[in-house]
Length: 95
Image 1 (spheres, rainbow, N blue to C red):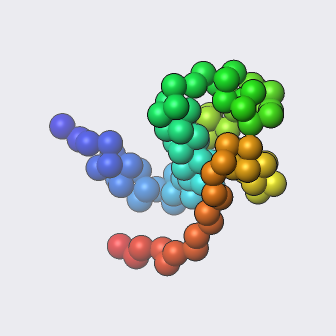
Image 2: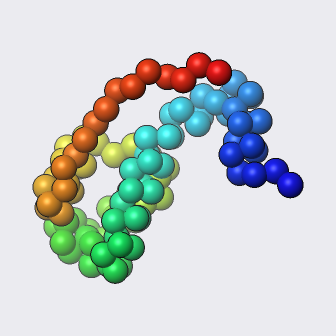
Image 3: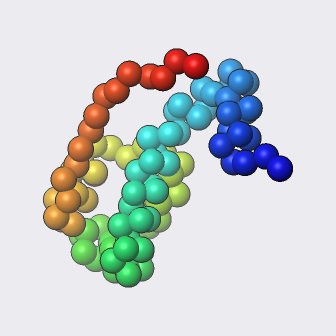
């Protein structure tokens, strides 16, 4: 049986898939972190939106991971939730 990581590794051999993966990876990372925060705090999207001072559809869009939110949006969200926004640049693994 193929694991998810094995499946993704195989798909990344396709240049078109790899390009699409790179373009959407940041949005998906943000989505995973936001969902984890919300679940850890026992919040619904609506409750998180209220705390963050944004409409609920904004949270839904962020959690979908299908687009990369503006840096200003992330800054405001982090500030309202009492979080630090950390951005890092690291070398790409060659393999």
